[in-house]
Length: 286
Image 1: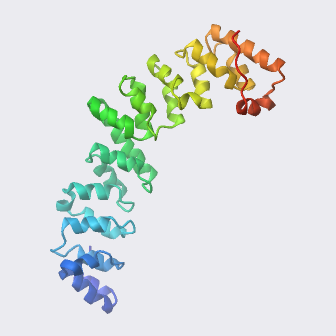
Image 2 (image 1 turned 90 degrees about the horizontal axis):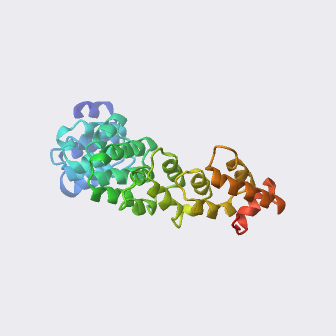
Image 3 (image 1 turned 90 degrees about the vertical axis):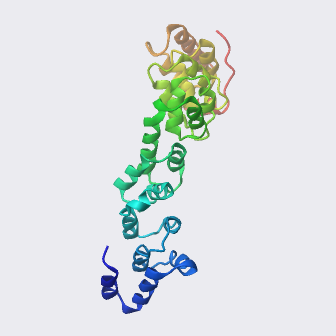
């Protein structure tokens, strides 16, 4: 950063008094200057010996804070030792990328969750916050895993769900951030516990999702009874595809073939699939 004397030379002389005040201000005057829109005044304010860490925290609540001001704050090692400022800098949109990524590694678990879910945070920063969470999962005690399963982002909840712990599975399935895409990833994972598949198949929300139902019918860990309960909701096209050799176990395949033929005889065609979804017919045991 240029010396304050250089700043007064290179800017309009009307700014010099304001910058001088920024260097020496205290109390209410300093608090008012924290909201200045003049970049040079903010830079001068950072050199004010009366500027406390709490004042810097106020500055960092301003999402439009100039990049140059952020960069100067990042160069102050004494400020970077303060956890509150670390967190504020990590999620500020103008913090240099490499600085944000470094600071994420030093944040507490639930602060990483907050950043991963916070609106306005860049997609890259959210993804890196999730990466930090997933990296820590193997070392976490059960209590913290349950908390993450309940409140964490979708990817973290999905990973915890796939572990199959009986205390975690129902909590993760009820996570409001969990998505069907993550459920499908869990079902596609090799070695996913059968208990997880059964929990998904009987969950009040996920068992009603069409794509999840398709994945469940395909999954060999789904019970025959559960698979049969989903058949009336599937389109003729999907029934026909699932009935191809090698996709599902042979006992279920016979039911799929019979249901496909029954629906075709009833006049259902691929063009009528949408109507079948809107007004499903009851499935009769074969």
